[in-house]
Length: 348
Image 1: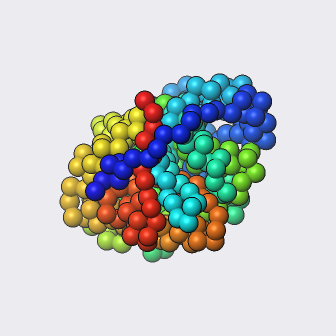
Image 2: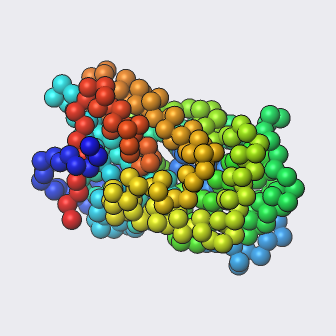
């Protein structure tokens, strides 16, 4: 049964007052600019590439003021997807996040805010504000002697896309090829007003710190970077060719926008069918990579979440939304472990 078929009781919609928001914002939310923990620790705050016409570069993400954050919170509505995970009379939560988003999407609606405040701690794939995580991510995304180099024609197209995105080539060249392609895909989304700086994870990490809640990482940078690598050179070349073609034709941006809008409007049916329309699971090699990047990580994520719940506390576990769906999704895996898992619908 799809998880969204489950329903929970409605609770009273109460928002914190402006004074409470001001205290939280002042402590932790302003000066955003830290990346989402999922993969891209090197994009934010990079120097401009030498000899680039900056007037032609995509706009950088703006840093909201205290007043802008307060206004954003007051106007916020629930986005994404939320599940309640119950055991022994205690409620924890799974929240499906978006790693690259628009500015006004990062603020928490009443239902999600209530769930976060009711939890003892916040768990993210990786905590983007942890200096050790940032250091290890920077090391783990670096190219190694074992990585397959792209053929020069493809490498030249990668450089062209980096130049169009105003991304420094010396930094791009330190990344393994799969990470180069992922980075270029994220940068291309700036044309739609979407930035990793506005993703769910940086905001949640800062917000949790404002509430003085512990923030923990469910994975390691090394594990995430291993999941991104493709061992078969033929499969890597096929992925690079398709990714570059989609970037060059702006198809990648359109698909990213469709996914983002489905998340922003909590269209769970559409994201449950993501593999049918994403153009990322059309061949056996693509499906194998999908399983490696998403499905194969889910048992470890579920184990870590269950371990934290078993200690007697409550957890707000925020993980990329695509980890939530299907028989190998986190709600299903936690159900198999004996937890009562209910989808929490948002009010219209």
